[in-house]
Image (cartoon, rainbow, N blue to C red; front, side, top):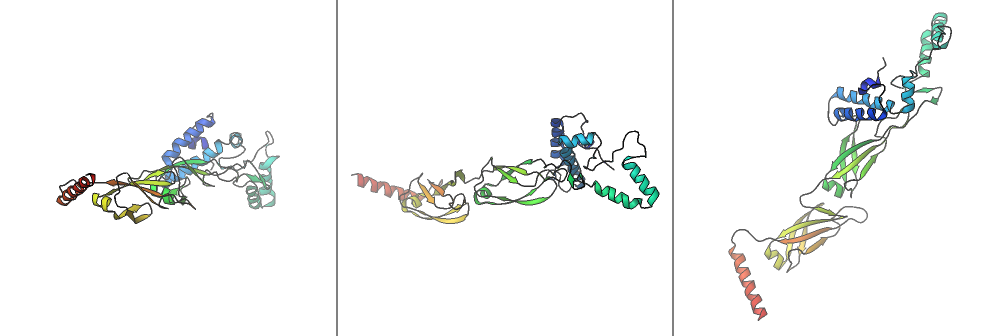
Length: 300
C-alpha cells in the first residue's frame, strides 16, 4: 500500500517548498536517532519523513507524484486512457494475459519488473537526482583538535561511523562526509553530511595559531636557583629546565609540543609564574633576608 508524503510531513498539498523544508527540519529534530536513541519507531518515522522531504523538494518528482504518474516510493503507476475501458492500455494487457494464456502471474512479474523501485523503465532513468546535503554541528574536545583523533557520530539514517578529526581543526571549520547526506531519488547518489565544528575550551591551554600557550607555577627557589620541573603538555608529561634567575613572565619554549600539524608541529610556549607560599615559611624568610643583605652589600 502506498503512503502519502504530504501526510508524513503534516503539510497540505498546496505547501510551498519552504513550508516543506520547515516541516522537515522540525520533525527531523524531534525524530533524529541522536535525540531518540534505541527508539525503532522514531527511526522508521525519521526515514519516512526524510523520503517524503526528498520527493517533495524535487520539483519534477513532486509534479509526477501529484499527477499520479508515480507513487511515494518513486514507482511508476499504470496509466489508463480515458474512455478506453479494457480495450487498451496496461489494464487490458493484464486482463488478456490472465484470461487467455493462463500465464497471468508470469506477465505480472515482468510488468512489475519493468517499473521497479527507483523509477527506471527499459534501462532509462526517470528523475535521477542527487540527495540534499545535511548539516550538523559538533563540539570537538580541545586536545582532539590539537592532536587529531576520532569521534563516533550517528548519521540521519541511524548508522554510526567513526569521524576522523584532523589535527589543527578550528572552530567554524566544516568537515564534509561524502555520501552521508539525504538519499538520492531515482537511483541518484546520496548527498553529503556537512559537520560544522566548535572546538571546546581547555582549563590550562590556549591556542595561538599552531602554538599553544600555558602558565607554569614555580617556587621562588626554583626561579632563583633554576632546576627541572614537570610540565603536562597536550601530548603528555615532560620535564622542563628552568634557568637560574628566572622571573615571572619569562617565556620558555618546548618545540613540537603544540598543535600537531604535519610536517611542522607548533610549539608549547610556557610562561613562568612565581608563586609564594601563603603560610609563613621560616626558611623562605631567611632566604629572602639573606638575599636582601647580599643585594645591599653589592649596591654599596
